[in-house]
Image: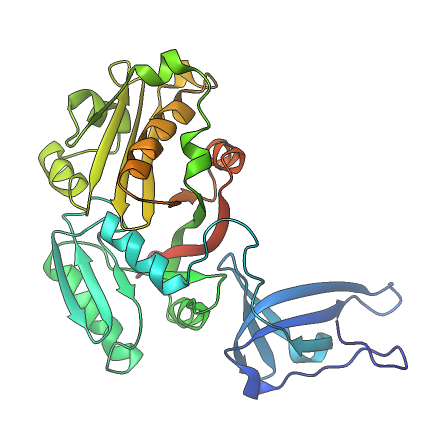
Length: 331
């Protein structure tokens, strides 16, 4: 917080700072009760009629009465990672999008409308990297109509928590009644340690790699309503590999794209968990990616998946930013 030489807290933000990353402190409490202070850090996404909205890196918007502020200042972007690969938000957004290619897409200014028969939100949502070219209300009306024409719900994928992310858009979607239906983290790390992580050679030797998913793979993945549609989607990408262990006891998917290897669909039969099978699958995939010249790794993990998050922590992955799928009229 901002403290003057005299020891007093100061408010050094104004409505002109909307769009900047800020740190604020507010006080709560009633007369006769000791005050309670709380802090918030995030992007100042609005300041209207005496209420500030701060969108945190997890995508949650905090609404704060101007009268409760006791301190506030503009702060620099979150510090860059000190280990592993460096990457901008836009680079990662484009790399991750190429790993989940839609079957149909259309440009709306610098936005991309994506559809794939409803298989994965990532391939059935708007990727808003830039200006839609028309006012936001008009852009969202076009989005709604485009997805309705295809019998799909309208989603916008927007990110928070890194330089260049879309906190302002998140706040505007929320204000218009779009609901954040699910959030996930994009994590990155060095690729070589993933390839070296599996110590059980007998397990890794049993992992098979193919260019297309078989029935066992699709059965373990378990998110498939239309197998033919899933196959069409899953094989799309710069260099796609499918790993399977023991007739589908553990599976995984990887997309190699230049220096990046993206891991996804890592799934283990519940009866075989905590035996290192997921680590073995990822290690074998990583070694193939290293052979293809990749050096950095990324993956996406939903915030309510503690088991996967612990696995990826142990493999050296750290959060780069979060992304959120906002659905129109989900209330």
